[in-house]
Length: 124
Image (cartoon, rainbow, N blue to C red):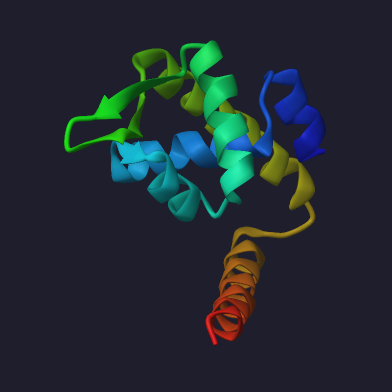
């Protein structure tokens, strides 16, 4: 299972989401990181604390607003993210083993359609 694999990689889903958002969007304040990663405000604070304790992210004061922190992924964090990517690929391969590549593509399209629908519904 994905959760078991993440546990073996010493990570949580929130860790992956935060690191992936930082990799994709660059350094962000905690509030923007939470939005980009789709995480609640209290969850992002705890996640950043955990990642900073493990030196996977750096936290520094925002030069334009010292009340805010800017979060940046470290080299170690990028390496950890690559490990987590490998873990997720292995988990997906295991979970979707009965599907051929065309069926996997079809499933991805259908799931994206469902997600887009519910994202629009939540925005109303």
